[in-house]
Structure formats: structure tokens, C-alpha cells
Length: 297
Image (cartoon, rainbow, N blue to C red; front, side, top):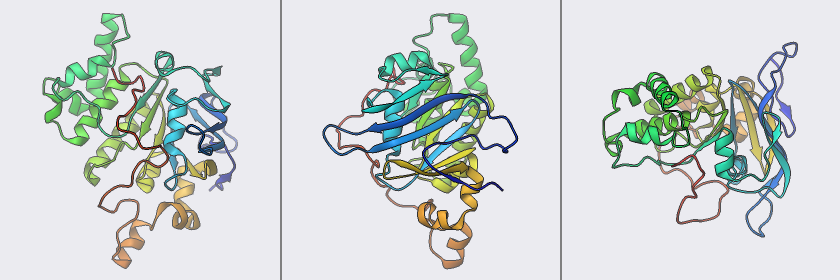
């Protein structure tokens, strides 16, 4: 088993003698913050290749959500660069990045509750002018996300939280994005629904989509991810194959909470999956409304 690497980058979880594919998405040496406050991200770099899931974990305040805001154009970095398929897209707005293939699925639920599932999903393709292509993508997302197909004519607001999240994923996939940014997709979901959701994210990976995932349910997310990056104080503290990070007991104690078997032995709940109120967003300033990231219509 290869050792996790310290530093600022994230690489594909592949053997040393196996060729690493070209990155689809990169953020390099990013420094970013809010207003005149101190920097949240301090020289952070992450790389995502096609058909891989890179998971960002770490304590509150580490900068996880800020990474996604920079990646989707919601927050302009003070320095560093953002690259999509090798092209520099630093400083572009959310609409321009969406058109280039970056979809951002925000924390919480963003379905239009009074509209049907079909109407919600089709809104994801509102920039696609080819009607035949839209129908092809509708057929694909109904196959990839069975719940979406089964509830196609249902009112979205009547769906469960996990079903609504799958509608959001399907809507994002209508753009055929190069990379999907997922911010806390399991927030508020029960363990069974969370497992089903992560299965759908793995299916997106099988289709060749690059996924950059922020998740508080660290152990469960790393079980599904290819690469893990542990953030601390605005930097990548350590990165490597997700399985290696899970197998590191010292890393687990510091950042992932007790392993499930250890929790069962002690009678204590797993810190990564324990029920109860979830903490607030880790690094964003208080706000009354969620900004439109361009992935919503």
C-alpha cells in the first residue's frame, strides 16, 4: 500500500508505474478569502482527473466549501489559477464556467418544489439549444438515476430529501459537465439514503464525470472516493488514495473520528456518522440567502 503524501496537491489513486491521465480540473496555489478578513485558503492545490472522485475532508474552518466557491466562480481568488482541461479559467463568472462544463450542486435542497421532477431536470438543459440532444440526456439521467425516472411526473416537493438530491444531480448532469462540484450532498439524510446517494455519485464516475466532493461524513465518503485530501488551515495537509487515508489510524483519530468497529466496542457513536444537528457551513460568512452558482436555473 502506498503512503499518503503531504503537500498541496491531489493525484489520482493509481500505482506508481501506471500512467496518470491528464487532469480535467485543477486549482493551483489558490489563496482566497472573504472581504478584508484573513485568508481562508493559503496556497491550496487540488487536481481531479476524468472518471474519478476526489473527496475533501477536514475540520470546520479548514476551507472545504471555499474551495468549491472558487472552483465555480462564486469567489474570485486573490492569487493562483483555476484550469479546466488545461485552459486557464481563473476569474470567469459562474455563468461562463457553467457553459464550459463546471456544475456546482450546493448544500441543502434547490429543487423547485411546485414543479414536476421532469420540469426540474429539463431546466438543467436550458442553455442547450438542440432539442434532440436534450431528449437524449433526459433518457440518460432517467437510466442513471432510477428514482428520477420512476417519479418523472411527480411534484418535486413531495419527494423525500434523498430523492430531491438525486433530482439535483440529474439536473446537473443534463449539462454533460466535465466536472461536478458537490457540497455536503448527504446533509440531513439517513444512513440508508446516504448509501444510495453515494452509489449514484459512483455511477456518475463510471460515466467519466470528474467529481470534486466536500463531505462531513468523511469515512463513508472516502470509502467511495478514489482520492482523499485532508484540509487543515486552508491547505492540503495530506492527500493520497482514499483507501490509504482510511487505513491510517493516526489520521483517522485526528480527522475522521472513531472507526465504526471502535465505536461499537466503546458504545459511542461514530463521530463521522453520529445522529444529531450538523455543524454550520465550515468557512463561509453568515448570509441570509444562498448565492446563485449558475447550476441552478
